[in-house]
Each structure stands twice: as C-alpha cells, then as structure tokens.
Amino acid sequence: MNIQWYPGHMTKTRRMMEADIKLVDAVAELVDARCPEASRNPILDELIGGKARIIILNKSDYANNDITAQWKKHYEERGAAVLICDCRSGKGVNYFVPLLKKKLSEILERRIAKGIKGQALRVMVAGIPNVGKSSFINRMANSRKTKVGDKPGITRGKQWVTIDKQIELLDTPGILWHKFDDPEAAKKLAFTGAVKDEVMDIVTLADELILFLQEHCPGALNALQERYNAVTLEGIAIGRKMLITGGQPDIERAANTLLDEFRGGKLGKVSLEKP
Image (cartoon, rainbow, N blue to C red):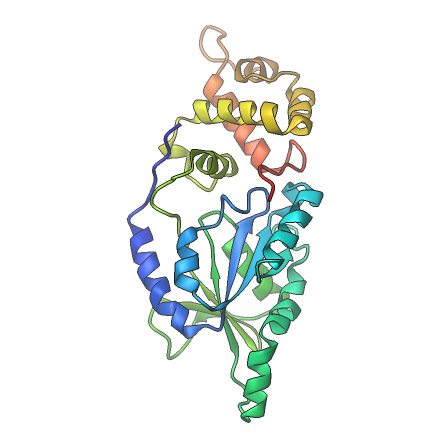
C-alpha cells in the first residue's frame, strides 16, 4: 500500500505551532499507546526544541499493558515525563496535573523566588489527527468544570483551556507529516484510523491488517477467529450475512466492520509495535 496524505491545512498548522511554541512552558504530546512511535510526528522534535515534554500514551485500554509499560520506561529514559491514560474512559487522566507540576517544578520554584505570583504554566497539547487531543482536553476541562474558549490577549483563533489557577492548555489541530518514509508505520496509522479511510483502498487495508495480525499478534488473530469464525474478509462477510445482490459476500462492508471493531478494541488489547 502506498499512503500519501497531507491536507492543505497541515502546512498552516505547522506555521501556527512554530509561533505558539514561544508562548508555552511545555508540550504535552499525545500518542496512540498501540503504536507510540508510528503515531509521533518527527516535526514536533524540531518545533519543541528544548521545551519540557510530557508524552501521553493515550488509548491504553486498547493496548497490551506490558508493552505499554515498556514504552513508558523507554521514553522516560530519554528525558520525557510519561502518562499512561485512556481519555475515553478517563483512566489515568487525573495524574496529568501532578505530573506536569513535578516536571516543571524548577520553573515554579524560580517564579516563587522572584516573587512572581499568579502566572500560569502554559502547555501546548499536540499530536497527529485522531490520537485523542480533543478527548484529553475535554476530560481535563470537564473534570475541573472549567470554561473552554479564546483567551483575551492571545492571537485570535487560539483556544486556551484553564485547568486550575496554575495551568493553561493550548489546543492545536492535529498535524500529520507530509511523507510516510516508513510504509510499516503508515500502515499502523491507517489501522488505528489516524489516516482517513477515504484516501485508501479499504479492502486492501483490512487484508493488510489480517496479515499483520497473523505475523505479529497471534492473540488478536485468535480473537478474530473466535469473533467471526473466520480469518478472511469473505469468511467474515458470509458469517455476518453481509451479502449483496446474487448472494455474493459484501467484502467492502466486511472490511469496514473489521477495521471499526479492531479500532474499538473488540479484538482485545493489541499493541502494534514494541520499543
């Protein structure tokens, strides 16, 4: 599969982030816990520079717990603070504020020493599309009953969320890099829904997913067999009575069903890559 997708607004988003990075003290980078490295945008490394970083392993309820723990250790060894959470269920989200304050404790101490009071820590929330940024921000806002909206004095269009008196989050659109140099990473992103299905052959993608599970995730393949009593799109279509005119199996519908149910965790806790 050849996946090339770079919507025009991505260039505008990058320029906006280059300007916004100067306004914040840290960056909270959301990644998909099922494929943390594939779902990280290398552009962020250039944009962030020396800013403190918290990597949020989101959708952890869909990923293998042991492998997620390995990723946490991997990123911590490289200097990042790491939060494992699932914004859909809210699991782990409440640990973000104390983790952030610990990561930025030196900044807070310097402000106290200078007699600076009331200045909030500002954090940019970034990540590729469909990794859960909006869900994360909504969870943070709802859990603390805060208002979401434009902040006075900030460039028009930027959305800030006040978490508590000391923390403000800056929401950013999802930014996907313009070229997939690693076709395997591209496939993992497509499997998880980070790339719009409309730009790909959905049947080919579902076939690739089945092949990937056969080669790398025997537990998920067993779950697929138990769920559909089949390991092919044709078998899934027949088993689910997805038929078209003439009684032929509706392969495209079966492909959509498989991808939707995989993305929804119906095949178990599956990690697509290890550190």
